[in-house]
Length: 194
Image (tube, rainbow, N blue to C red):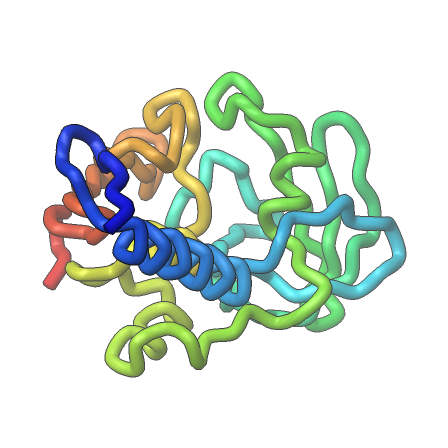
C-alpha cells in the first residue's frame, strides 16, 4: 500500500486523498458563506457582508459598537468612494464611512470590498442556533471566526493585525474594548459572551 508522511506520521495515500477532499469541500463551503471579495463600483447596489453600526450618519472604520444597527444582508447602494471615505445609501439614508487608517491599517477600497457583496450571504449555512445572533450582532461562544466577522465585522488591525490570530480586540468606544479568544477556530472567551 502507498504511504505518505503527514508531518512525522505515516498515513495511507487513500486517507491523504480523503483529507485533501475534505479541505477542498470546507473551503468551497466557506466561500459560499462569505463570497469572494470584489471591487465595488459607484452607483451599484450590494448586500452587506456583516453587521455594522453608525451614529449621526457616520460609521467610523474603527468599528465602534454603538448607534443604529445595519444588519448583515442589508441592500445598500454605493454612492461615492475616494481615498479616505465612502458613502453608502441604506434605506434612503446616506451613511458616511470615515476611515481612520492609523487604526484600521487598510485603505477605504479594502474596507469596501470587505463590506459589500453582489449577493446575499448564505446564512442558511450558519448553524441554526447562531443565525438570529448573527443577524442582531450578538457574538456567542462556539462561533467560528467567519461567523464572528459576519456578526461584528472586522476588528481594527492596529490591535488585531490578522484574523488568523487567536486573539481579536474590538472597540465599543474610544475607551472601551472587548477581547475575544479563539481556540481551534472557535470563540472560547470574551467578556459578556454566553
